Length: 307
Image 1 (cartoon, rainbow, N blue to C red):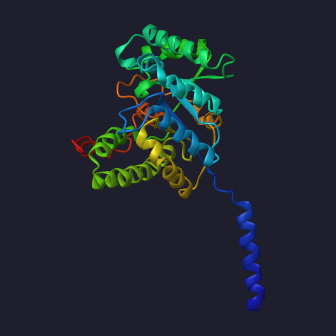
Image 2 (cartoon, rainbow, N blue to C red; image 1 turned 90 degrees about the horizontal axis):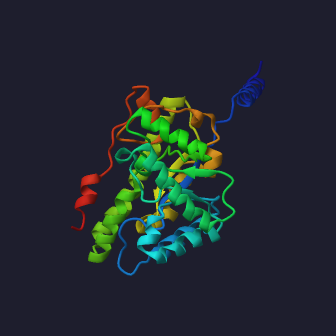
Image 3 (spheres, rainbow, N blue to C red; image 1 turned 135 degrees about the vertical axis):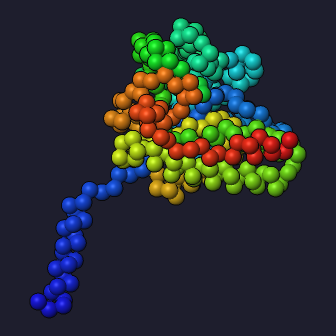
């Protein structure tokens, strides 16, 4: 066999191998936003409505699929003008979910008290959208799903009886940590601190893509469609275009939360009491008594910044 014939044979073999090898699963991410209509402190001259509109404008400009916003109704009681945020979100075609009325920590309440807070919040959601969503979604505040297995089971039974599904989280870099320092550093007009906030936000988000994917591989030996937890904070609004660009650079395409949660992985239930809470994959691995990645977020630096 001459060299040219041998080269053709190798090329044909490579094509056959490529055809026989399954394509790598596309990375998918659903963005969700907690604590509507108001989260954390605001920098000088910024309103809650401006923060929300920045989110909505970015979603539109970046051609994002529908983004769930999870509501704490008590904010509208404390500041009635923030009702405009929820109306704007709804009018923009973005769905709303239940985050309890008062951002209730299940660790501090009975199952009955928690469910009553969910019911109270649903009344507000029904007022905003009288026709309602086909599927109701609940996101646990603090990702606390029950400090005992008995409480966890009781709350889940109550939620399922009311027609809810759980809005699980599988990617989280605790974006909220940057919002309060941003308000402080903006008030002080500290460019060096603001630059640190910008850079550390993106660096941490990038690192926790790797962490979240590692947890998924550990739990399922594959990438599941991920659900990202964000908050409706002023710095989040500012950083959202760059954050979306980061996820695209890392190979993600965007989907809706309900589509992501159709994956069979999310049908599993850790069924374990956990006082600390955590993402879906963290809780599942902890229930299996497997070690999860250590937490490396810059808590102390962010807390001290611009004090």
